[in-house]
Image 1 (cartoon, rainbow, N blue to C red):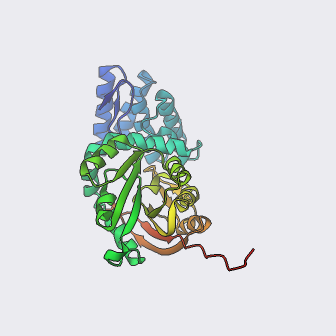
Image 2 (cartoon, rainbow, N blue to C red):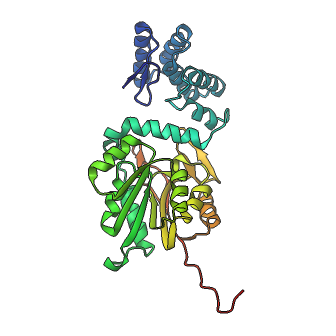
Image 3 (cartoon, rainbow, N blue to C red):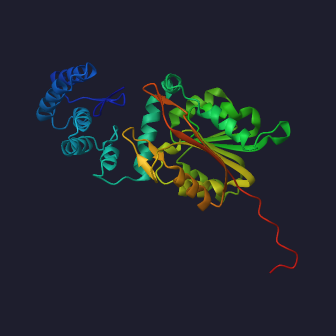
Length: 327
């Protein structure tokens, strides 16, 4: 896809406005693909000197400098990329936050995710197949192991698929639910899900706003799932609390995250969050839910290596009836 201004590295090319400089930018990427970082860096530095508003070149140069261990100059290049492209298609501001040189907000992450998935929707499932993605199947197995599916009598009346994307998780659970709803930021992803004709309701929107509307309208779900969605959220406590408000009594909340051995949430170079197990446990407990299942899994691979992750299943316990005569 070609834009008047823009970037590459996420499949979007933003021209410098000069065909010669655009060609030199492509040469730099070719050198990089052959492993020649020195030549690629030299060309990119020449390109941005001649075209200081060329966001794609600045972004590529920033990534190169970071890979070479030059954090200070990488930060400067990411800032130049962000300044050159106010819409920030590449997510330069997110990289600055990751490097501790800027603030990050949920809105920034949401907008980055929406643009990414709008662009990649037509080839999204093919890309996941190459990554050996198996999140929905593992979630289904976890919900079953947690006791949520034990036969025809235990079908879910209503299920909500958060960040439903093209509908892979919905397809995995469809036979277990009576009414299936999905919500996603990306209109293009929802269009792909709609073609599957498996959802009873699909909505476009930001997750927290959608959940607030569901709770305000009195809608309750027996199962809420999120497959490979929370990698775009830092603190899981707000989303867990919001989900708790739309769960029916004895309802289940099942989700996957990428994980790491430390505490809290870590924003990786992939612009995906990894969450420590203690953070997951705390978010669930603070939401008033009971953790019934937490296992280490790898829902996908990168560069042939499994990505460490967790699957969690939590339950909303039924409120005890007040004792007779209680005040």
